Length: 453
Image 1 (cartoon, rainbow, N blue to C red):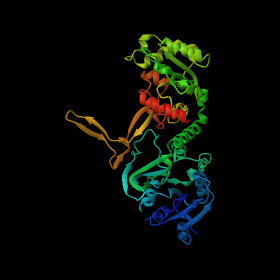
Image 2 (image 1 turned 135 degrees about the horizontal axis):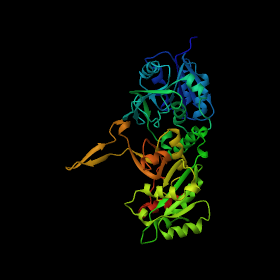
Image 3 (image 1 turned 60 degrees about the vertical axis):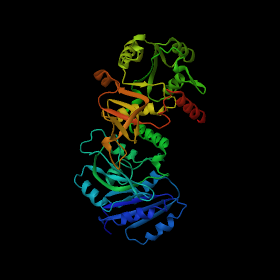
Image 4 (image 1 turned 45 degrees about the horizontal axis):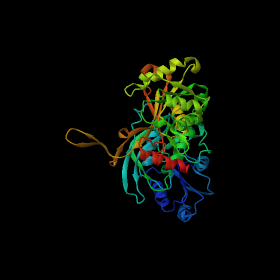
């Protein structure tokens, strides 16, 4: 039997109500030189009843297994696939009838292309289109830090085998791991046509935000392991301005620790930071820090002129680097940490540093992606400039700076005299880590969440 050109595989766990549409969308492709592999990963609903209807199809393979997880299922599909190209389709999503036709044609344009991915529609549980997600034109993209969707990307099987398939120690992933492997090694292409339908519902992996973001951290960490990041000199600076008439906000206790202690302890938990420096002009903060931290950090009383609100933090950084030149040695990266984010997890500090090296950018900041409507005032009233309209262009996405992490390569900082400079990368943090305690209400929320840890 002649081998198929494309192997499409559907991974399913308890999506019996959706899987028929997913399967039919593959079987109804205009491009016919494909095989379909259906992997049922230990479903307990009616999935098997639906899948059994297709067992006599000549181009359909069916695998029933205990619940092994997505990445193990991905590698099983890779072993079974006979095609030159391979594509994953989630059981709750479905494809446009032209999907394979367009993407096979695109990947065939250049033997160096290892992955092709399309735009897509976001639909609800009933299949009603909510939005059209339109990606960048990747012929013009120079910073490859926005991955393709995990499903419905057409991949050259030989390239996937070359990178060793999927890491099976990640039980939660959305295509990010494969993206990291591929962008460093192969050519990536896309087509700005919406060729699949991504179903948004309560069980989506992407809704498990914290778990997903932590997994991405582990993927990035694994991706930079060969770069010896830990051997470099990464310094963390915690600047606190001072000059408060009342008790300093940094010394306010959240449950059992001050905001200052929470920030310092988080910095000390990181894998990457070599030195942690607290700098402030407030004697009360200096005295408290010295009473708690006998060693482990540098405690600096900076000149009051550098603590004024109109002073650029670059002046404080220059002052610190000059004053502690001998102790710090040759600095590789600088990370500023704002003490007003007490629920920020330490992994995000490491993630910022790792991201800087993995994507070869000059600086990185922590952000949240915003999908609300935004407006500007044109003198005559409010005018919408970015909205959550049905056509969502990737270049129009809005990111809010939050989480209080700013990391820069030292050489880039010296060149631009700014902590956010040059080619700017980003890390997305979770909603809890983004809580800033600048009001009594936010402090109460943070305290409630802290007690639940």
